[in-house]
Image (cartoon, rainbow, N blue to C red; front, side, top):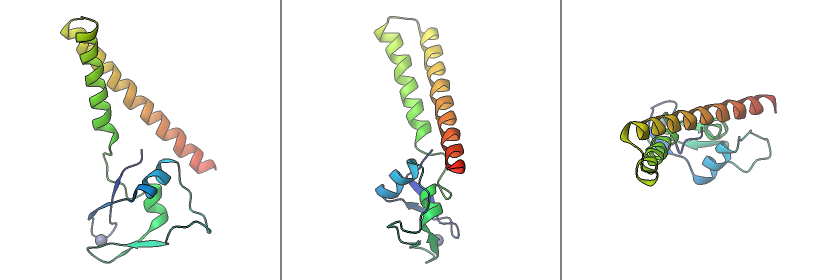
Length: 122
Ligand SMILES: [Zn+2]
């Protein structure tokens, strides 16, 4: 899963990815010799040159990424909707929230693995 932040491989400072880098990483970026990215970015803290390609590809990503809180919020919303929208009991609503969380995290994991496999093959 793509993250919006990454850590400097030398000093572990948390740095922001540019929007372009994030989108390219999410889409399964592969380095190419003619791509428009600079070969490296300079860490503002230790001045180490961080190679751009593995950064965009997610090798230095901060974990856990944005997905877990999103999945929690969505499953909470599903439980809430089940309880107040469908008029079901609290126990059943917790069950729905938990099932949604498992489904979301499971789907994200499968998606992530499929994308990694495609990247490796491609
Ligand atoms: Zn650094």
